Length: 180
Length: 209
Image (cartoon, rainbow over all chains, first blue to last red; front, top):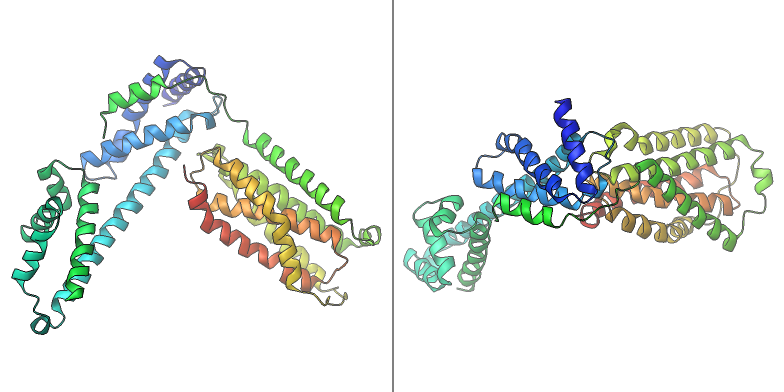
């Protein structure tokens, strides 16, 4: 443990002096070190990879704050934990927003259904009028029951991009249905 | 996102020699000296309270000034520690402003038993003056902290504003001819807590990296 710490600290000192080979080695070792830490806390492998890359970029940005006389691991873990917390915060905020979007949409659908002439066909019609990508995402997620992650895999997109597109689609749909 | 190996190659390709940041204690000392210089300039413009030599004979006033100085030094040092990702593994010291503020509160409480000074006519003007004097140090400390990598941005923001406001509070205690404990608690020190809360809110936005 102490040896690894010393090795990594040594690599970081060399990296701070401009040794690119030492720096590349340090980043690889850091990724190896942090992967199990992130895997225990995140469910999807894709998420772990994305976050790991974000952490390496953060380490790169903050490398001037590392004091070569101190152990490397606590410094790197502090950055990893910070980015992990950020990631989880955004992840849950995203899910909450999505849940709110669905709940709002459901409320609109349940309100005076007979009077507002909103029926399944008209909603499907509105979904079809959305930009192609948005309508495909909504059909997959809410008619065929795929999750955002599965939809992303099916469409070859990033999960966050699917969520953003779905969020925009809900907003457009809500505006259209409220106008009726 | 990019492949991990590709990212490693990109980042290592950008690795020019980097000058490591100074030790947080040294950084804290630099910030303290900068704030002290600003305080000296502010006092040179406003002047010292005319009865300062008499006031310095009162143990209550001296104790208050000393604890305020302690809060000032503790919060600048803490801000410097909080600018580093792992707080230089001196987490306890980063919480020193809480202890210093508690000590200041105890000093004021002790002073309140012997408080015979009349309440001045003004009130919120003191808070406004402290805020105005603290504005420049607040901007400066946030700008300086943005050059580092805080992993506790809320706490760092709170401490940064506390450091700036303790500079303003020191200025007013050395300038204003007033020793009413009730007044200084209400209009000098309680607003500092509010400043700490505002810093807490601002930290996440301003210290993002």
